Length: 188
Image (cartoon, rainbow, N blue to C red; front, side, top):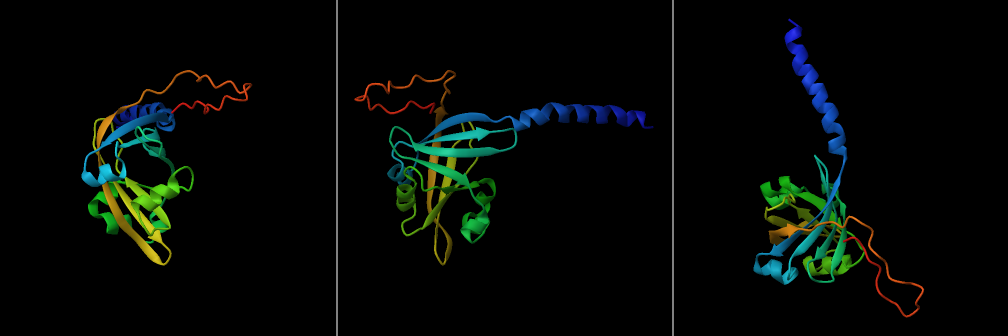
């Protein structure tokens, strides 16, 4: 009787052993998206580029960059407690499939907050799943003192492509020349 259960248990255990390291290993990816609606083109003329780590189970976005422009902002994971209300209340059914990130004060973060959510002290982005070949919807949510979060903008993007990551270290500018003010090369 127990012999018939032994094979499925062995297969399940072996699958768990093989998948555990794969789930833990994150891949750094860079996807670009084109603005597809008038409001999205007004906010991000040439679209957005996302730098993120993807594992078997999760996605963690680090930075968004305006494609072909100089604007960029760092993101950090956030929770509904930061909004003062539930994501589902704000976004309806779409809120269930979107991950919530707060725009940080680094880089162009304050300017992005002001542009997306005038009057907000803090701004959040509810970002849909980042998948190759799939369009993306991003909800901008503002929060101000004494006021729960509100939906500021809905931004729609069409998938443009995936960037190839550099394999080798990039050469850096010669800092021995005091007149060389070239920026430091970075991998993305």
